[in-house]
Structures are given as C-alpha cells and as structure tokens.
Amino acid sequence: MTDAKVGQEGAARNRIAGGVNPWLDWTSRVAIVIVYGGSALIGAASIHRLPLGSVDNLLMIAASIANVLFLGLVALTTITRLIPTMKSKGVEMRVSALLGAFPTVALAFLPKAELGPIWSALSTTLILVGISLSIVVLRWLGKSFSILPEARRLVTEGPYRVVRHPLYLCEGIALVGVTLQVLSPLAVLIAIVVAMIQCRRMINEERILRLAFPEYDVYAAATPFLIPAGLIPARLGRRAHQAGPELSTKAIDPHA
Image (cartoon, rainbow, N blue to C red; front, side, top):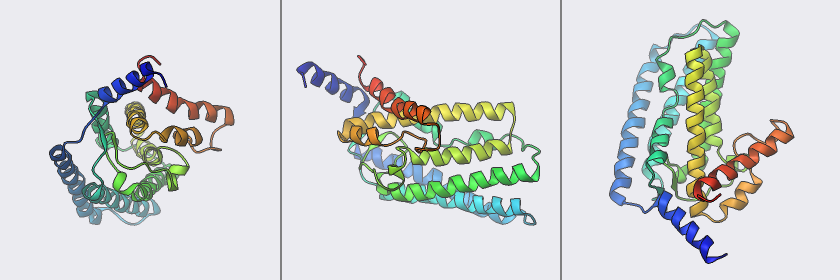
C-alpha cells in the first residue's frame, strides 16, 4: 500500500467517521427508548380496540402485536447495546437515518384502499411476516443494533449470512404490505422515496463498517447486498451483488 493510498484512507476516515462522545451516546439512547418505547405502549393500548370476526382482522391483530414486540425490542436493545467504536459525523448520514427510522409513518395518514378479501389478507400477511422476521433479525443483531451509521461489532452469521442487510429486507416486506393497504399513486410515490432513503442508509452503514472492520470486504464479496441468492436471475443477482461494494467504496474514496 502506497503512502498516497494510506493518506486517502486516513482522509476518508476523518471525513465520514468520528469518535464517540459518551454523553451524546447515552442521550441518543434515551431518545430512542422514549420514542420506540412510547410507540410500543400506545400500540399495545390500542390492540383491544381492533375488530374481530374475520381472518383479515385476526391477521391484523397478530401484525399489531408483532409491531408492539418489535418496537419494544428496539427500545430494550438500545439500552443494552455496545458502545460504538466508530460513528458517522456527516449531516447527510444522520438525516438519512432519521428519515428512514419511521418508514411507514407517512403511509399511516393515507386513507385505506378498498381491497378485496384476498388482497386485504395478502397485505396484512406481508406486514405480519415482515415485522416477525424483523424481530428475528433484531434479536440476532443484538447489541450491535443502531439507527445511525455506527460500528460496534461485525455480525456475519445467522440472517447476515444470507444478505448483508436482512433487517432492511424484512422492513421492505412490511412496507409493501402497508403500501397495498393504502394503495394509490401517492402511496406508491411515498414507498419509492422510502426505499431510496433506505438504500442510502445501507450504503452509509457500509461506509462505516468498511472503515471499522477491514474484514468487511471479504464478507461483502461473499454475501449478497439485499436480495438472497436464487430469488432473482443470476445475471441480475451478480450486478446487484456488485453494486453495494462499488457504491460504498466510491462514497469513501473521492478518487474512485
């Protein structure tokens, strides 16, 4: 490695990554616990008002319970998570993370679409499956969980052997379900914007992970970015697999 290359990497590290302020770290933890814990309590208090009488209603109750469990788990995990070894310090990284933290809030204010029983059950099932899988991934991620781009401990096993960003994949499944329930041109537009923000979050997170963990490049070379191998045509899969490393590397190296 040349001195010039070392200098470029050091400049990149200083530009997008910063040290850890314990006071700010705990302040952010408290804020996350209040927001997610409060949302979990509000959701739990409203479950008993959901109607019964159909399969779709029962699925919606199950999805609501899963959502409460997920929100509560986020709050609990935030309290017990590890202190980050590296944090992002760019404004764009933090704004993207905060905008993407509540991806379905805007959709919740749209009027429900008139769906037939099959489509209604499908949308609710997608929400239930997406949230339930998110709980599994979050439990596996454990003390490495964060909302902002931060490095704690590199997780490469379990769901992270399938794709590099399984939590975003599961949240995407739930997002499709929510979009179907309020299906309209505006809902589709919001969902597309949310997906773009989430993609940006994934790239930003990889920027930090590549700086904090030299072994991340080896892991990324062997693991798909977002879509599991075999679910899309091989040619598209290879292109998607290569896109993540290329984008995050270009974001780090201004000369790439």
